[in-house]
Length: 194
Image (cartoon, rainbow, N blue to C red; front, side, top):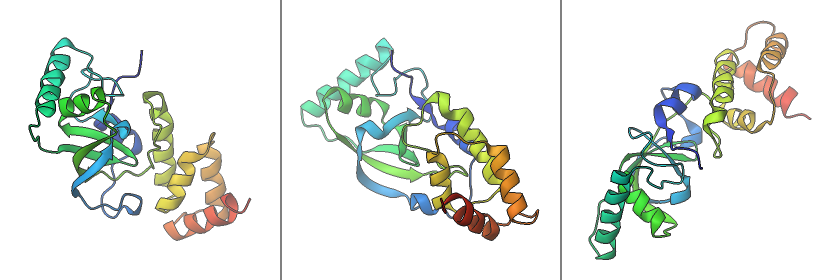
C-alpha cells in the first residue's frame, strides 16, 4: 500500500513557517503554469481521501474523480487546480479530483495556480511522513544556526546529521554568538571545504 497524501500543515509545522524573503522558492505566486503530476504529493484539507500518488482512497472520492475524468474527456474546460508549493512538493488547495483524474488518465502535468510557502528548513523532494522528525530537527538547528537558503538545501541533502554537534561546532567557530553572517562563513569554511 502506498503512503497517504502528505498534509501541508504537518510539513510546515515540521519545517517551520518562515516569513519574508525565501530565495529558494522564488517566492512569488504563479497564476497559471503546468506542474508535474508526480510532484503533487499532498493536500491542504483532505487527508485520508487520496494516496501520495493521488489515487482516490474512498468510494466517494473515486466516483467524483471518475466524473471529472468524463468531463475532461468530453472536452469540458476546467479551471486550473490551486496548489501550495513547499520546496519541490505541491499540496492541493482546490482541485483534488482534477489531479486524481489527471493521474488516472496518465497525464504528466496538470494546469495549476501556485502559492509558494516558505519554511525555515528546506523540504526535500522525496519527503515521506517518516522524514518529518528529521525535518523538525533541521528546523531547530537552523533556528540556532541561521544558514542562508543555499546551505539549508545542502543540510537537507546530508544523509545523517548530528544536529547538536553541528550547533556546538558553529558556536565554537563563531565565538559563542552565531549570527547569520557567521553561520554562512562557518558553513562555507567547515562544511563545504571538504
